[in-house]
Length: 307
Ligand code: CP
Ligand code: NVA
Image 1 (cartoon, protein in one colour):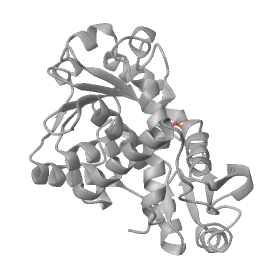
Image 2 (image 1 turned 90 degrees about the vertical axis):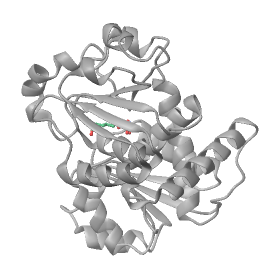
Image 3 (image 1 turned 45 degrees about the vertical axis):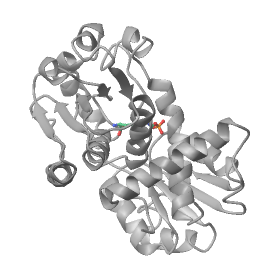
Image 4 (image 1 turned 180 degrees about the vertical axis):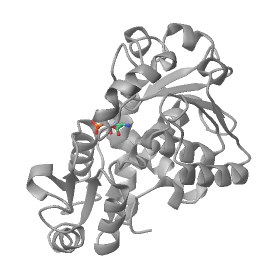
């Protein structure tokens, strides 16, 4: 596989190998540092949307592995506007060694990968967020030792982050439940893929409306913003639909006593999650954010074939 566009493109065994590699690279980093596996390599980071975690974690991942990263802002590139995606892909391929792109339209990152001879990594699209999904799986793996048989519940919008989490769970044998309001369901094609993977891993995917029912026996409660980047004009309607889906102390108390709470961040405290939960004993929000860097080191090393 040349690119990292979706977790659904990878076999369960490969997803597990990526996680094992991430664990190894994390251990190395925390006990003195990583060897310069990517010495001399440069990653171009193309952003159509803002970012804290993706930008900094990829940059630091490259530095820790002996490489470098270039940040290209929406204003500089004008992907698909100033210049066609096909042209950007072919130009960058002559300068740098890999591209990470955060785009509005998923087809744009797919098109970048089609036209570029170097690896392309999806740093979030309107469809999915596979680097987040890998960091999430890594966080759950560290907490519970395995994803097999765990109950992972996503509360809120069936969005890009939910799609990648569902695919990671279904590949690795965790039961995935989504509680969302009507009209905020998962992408149907992504759901179909997830259901196939769940059959293969003997896990389940359950779609509910009631968040209280959804958190029964949950080992992981996950939430994300009600309004994703690019949906700003829907914000008001969403603020009316989502309040029953807030992850608060009451909801967390209805789950398994050992439940962990996750959020890809940025969090809108007082909306999808309360301060008490985000900063409380069940929260894994910051280790999860830090795992972005460790998971992405594994993705980079894998794509460069230097594991
Ligand atoms: N979780 C995540 O992707 O964060 P950023 O938008 O800050 O990169
Ligand atoms: N669902 C959010 C995730 C941000 C990291 C968005 O797309 O804006």
